[in-house]
Length: 232
Image 1 (cartoon, rainbow, N blue to C red):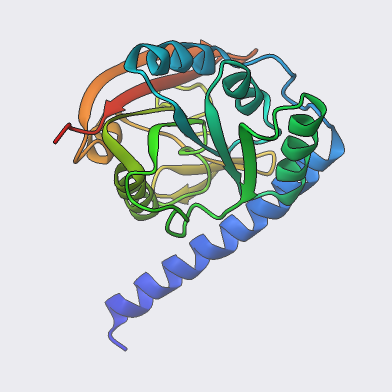
Image 2: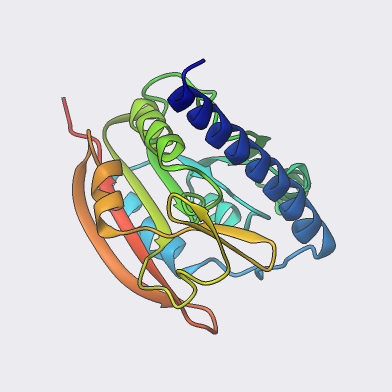
C-alpha cells in the first residue's frame, strides 16, 4: 500500500478509536445523572420550534438527542419527533420520559451512529434539528457525509437547524489537539467550527442564517445555523 494510503488509513483508524472512546465517555456521563443538562428546553430548540411552526413543519428529526429535553419540548409543541442518539442510556431515558408524559405516540427514540447513513427514506422529514451534535468527535469528511444525509431525508423546503461551538470559543485551541479542528479536554472531544466549515456543510442547501450566541458559564460561543432544502 502506498505511503499516502497508509497515512490516510492510520488517520481513519485513529478517528474511529476516538469516537468509540467518546461513546463510552458519554455513556458514563449520561448514565451518572438522569437530567445532566436539565429538563427545560434549550434556547436553540425554542428558536427552532418557532421556525418549524412558521414553515408548517410536522415531522422533525433530532440528531444527538441526549436525554431528550429538546425532544420532549418538540413533542409537547405538537411535532412528530424521531430522536436519534448513539448512547443507549440516553435513548432509554427518552423513551421512559415519553411514556411518563404520554407522548410515546409522537416521540420515538432510537440508537444510531451518525457516521452511518440515516435509517430513513428520502424525503421523510419536514425539519432536522441538533444542538451540538455536529461538533462532537466527527471528522470533516464524516460531517460532510452527515450533512448530505440530512439533505437526503428532508423534504423539499425542509429546514435544518443546528448549533456548534465556533472557533471563537474560549476553549478552541485548548487541551490536546486531535487534528482536523478537534481538541480534547476533560475527556470530551470537540470539533470547533469556522465560518468556512459552516459554508462547506451548507452545500446543496440554501444558507438562511448563521447567528452567533453564547451558552453556559464559560460562556461557550456557538453558531446557530439555519438551512433550507431548495424546493422543487
